Image: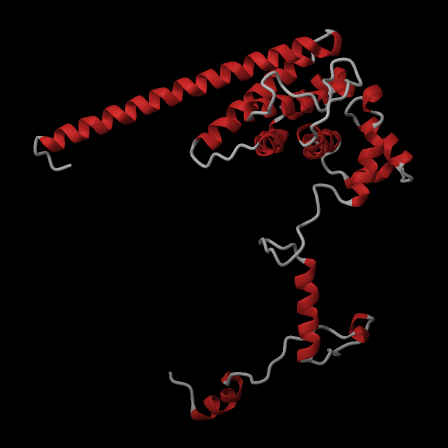
Length: 304
């Protein structure tokens, strides 16, 4: 049975689209217990201000040369706690106890370590980041000075001594910078196996590998490697493998000044260099043979 005209006339106003409908927030009085009271729709200026504040609070997900770079890995509070806790690592290791002592030394409560969601791994990462960042000024100190001075500590070379050839090659710089980075582990070397066990955990493997890749890239960059071919990746991958092996060897090295670790590092770098040369020669031979074969087939009329 069809609806009557009177029924249609009564419901028609309800079916019309609403105009100037605003979705408004409840007013302050409504939030305090008032009933049926709503705030007026926000003006365009207020809406623009709110949007600006929201946009400013969100992290920038793009890179721009017109804006300053994002802050470092750690904010000022985290850096203050970690730098103070780092002094306790030789005695307490990369542990929560060292973090708590560091927070106390920095003037914070013990509970302030909750700002470090990664716990002891944050302390390990602090060591990795600070030692990597220290390579740039160290490289300027070593490579940009022509004078020669004596070594200051056992196992440490004279800061400005030249290699046997009289000038720094890229290979010499890579070896020296890698050794300088290994020397950065001296004060925590007896605790480093504990750190390696933490970094090997599945949840910590990705950031640990990322720091290793950044270290290899930093060393190659400071050494003056300007390759733009696929060897860019091969050099950094081989250097990463050599560094990890040398670092692990150093944890069991009891020689004076870690001299055995230095010899181990040099042998591994020489082996990596020979392997890279052999692979390069094989690739060159394969490329030449393939090119000669293609030219031979073309001379016989093959359409290739």
